[in-house]
Structure formats: structure tokens, C-alpha cells
Image 1 (cartoon, rainbow, N blue to C red):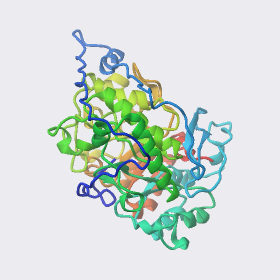
Image 2 (cartoon, rainbow, N blue to C red):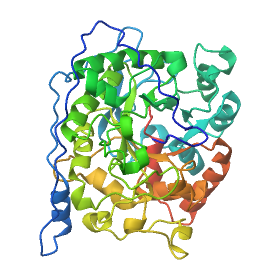
Image 3 (cartoon, rainbow, N blue to C red):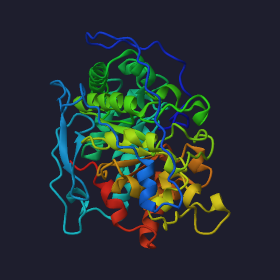
Length: 465
């Protein structure tokens, strides 16, 4: 999830992490095991399936001390079973502003979620978007256009949160205006990426959590914090970051302390505990940045970045293999380019709207294509890879409009179309003023065949209640 953009400002100055709110005994920092290397496939050239097999190391779940499906305390809503567009049951947080809600009841004959079967193309398009807002007025304008997912960023007026300002200009009022529950998301990782510290209390960074706490303590801490942000109206947290710590030279320091460890097993154990704590509080965790940003070449906020080839990022994939198995967890796809990804997943699809990246023609593909708009990345996530089960939950993009890895090659409307065509359920934009143009572009893309109606179904129905 982005650090910088209109809604993702530069990291805040380091804070003194708060202590866990419940009585817990901290232990000495751990020394993570060295990250395991995965050797490239030998000659002769491997088959596509062999490339994926070499890339993946069977991911340990390491749920000891973190397992269970605990429910939140009495004032925190639990999670509900929702039937997605593919008919698979997933677990999601309940209504955004505290309203009672019911799960969707299946799909219609076309396979569309029942709650969106009656909607026209524009209404469905609006329900796929996650839109960053600055305050009540632009949030209300987005809701009036059919948007049902609002993103709270660093530039948002926090008086919009429930209990923080005028009730007539709150999330609860926006939900009343919509006539149905809203989904409200935030970047609330801890450490330098935390948007609600002033209203919900400070969290330590992932690195500090892994160095000073047990997984059980992390779960309890995040359940406590999850209840605090849930009371404000937040239902989705774009956290934990499950990228590996690739060191100071990797990613231009953009991951750094946001990572639990350079060791995939340690990341898996702590991220599982973190995610389960949020689920205990009725908040949906969204892990990021698939397929892994920890060893990428730079910062996707400032330009294009690439990872090592697919056949050498097995350790980066391990936490995603484990966390994507957790019911109720979403996945965010990052803007990293992965050499070899197209060949390993079948290739062939090209991304519309990105002519500037290649000097014209019909778009970008392969190693030149950011994962967030690359069909190969979504195929890999949806189909699974050796050591990873197919993922059936909601898939988000990283910010499409505030990060140069995407905005440097295509505008907001084109990037939304490209992400939906690639396979994203929920394109994320921090440009609320562009909603009308984005909806126009999606409708036009459906009309001219660039997008199929089914490309909107899963995202539009992801929040059915």
C-alpha cells in the first residue's frame, strides 16, 4: 500500500510505540533465520509449470499460538459468510458504520452475485471502486454516484470518522445516504504507516512487533486496535504488509521497518497473528504487496520497479501462500514488474491503455507490465502455484493514481480499465474528483468489448450483505 500520494503522505516521524493495552509479557527480540534461497531451474529451459515450482517453497502456516477463529468483544461485530461471484464462501467484516447486515444469498443464473444482478453497468462499475476521499463532501459525491467503498488516507479530514465530529457529516450519515452498508478502508500498519494514530492510538512497526513481542501478543494487540478503529467506522485495514525485509539497498528503503523480518517463516507467523487479531475485531485484513515488494529495485511511488525473476522469488511468495489460505483475508497486488511471470502463467494477454509505456501500439506485457495491471499476476493468484491454494477472496490493486509506476504511463480512467481487465476486483484510486471519468471509461470499455460484464461481477458483489 502506498506511502506517498495525496492520501499517502511521506512517512510520519518515528513515534514511540505504544505498549499493548492488555497485560502481556514481552520477550527478548528474536534473531530471524536467514532467508532461504531458491535456485533457478536448471537447463534445459523449464516448462512454465516448472518455473512456478522452482519459484515456490511450500509455505509453513505456523499457526501455533495464532490459530482459532475468536470473535470480537461484545461491541465489535463478528464476521459473516458471504457468497462471492464464483460461488465460493468467503468471510468478510460486517457493515461499515455499525449497521446490522446479512450475508448475500447466492448468485443468479448468470453467476452474478444476487445483490448486483439488478444493477446496470455504471452502477456495477461504481461498486468495484475503492475511492480515497478528503472529507465528507467528496465522499458524499462518490456515494451519490454509486461508490460503496471509501478509503481514508493521510489527507482525509478525520472528523468524518464516527464519533469524531458532526454526526450529520460522518460515515454513519454517508451510510444512511447510501441506503446500505459502506466499506471503509485505511492504511493502518503501525510504525511509519499509520493513519489513525491520533484517534486510535499508536502501533509499533512490524519489525518492532517481531523483535519484542510473541505472535500471541501481536494477535491480542491487533484485536484491541481493531476494535478501536472498528468503532470509528473502519471495516478494512490494508495490512499487514507481508513483504520480506530485503535490506536497505532493496526497494529504496520503502519497505524497511514495515516488514516483520527477512525470513519468510517469521513473516508468516507474525502476519498470521496480526491478521487474526483484526478478524477477531471484525476488521478485514488485506495483505500486500503481491507477489512481493521486499526485493524490488526501487520505489513504485516514484517510478517503475522490478523484482528478481520469478524463479528466484520463492521466499517472497511463501507468506502469500500461507496468508491467502486464511478465511476473510484480502490481497493487494503491487505495482512491481516480475520478469518471467507471463511465461509461467500462460502469457498472451495485453493490457489496454498503457501505450505510453511502450511508445504506442496495444499496451504493455511481460516484464514491462506492473503486476497490478498484468493478467498473469491475477492468474497466478487465482489459480495458485505449488505450495499455494487458489485464492477466492477479494483482490485489490495498490493506488493506481498516486504512484508513478502506474500514473506515469496511464491516466486514472485507463488504469482502472486495465486493472479490471487484468483481473482486479477492487481498483484503488486516491483521486475522488476522477470518479465520473473512471465510470465513463469502464462503461465505454464494456460497450466496446474491452471489458466483459463478468469482469465487474466479482468486485461489484464483493461487499454484498
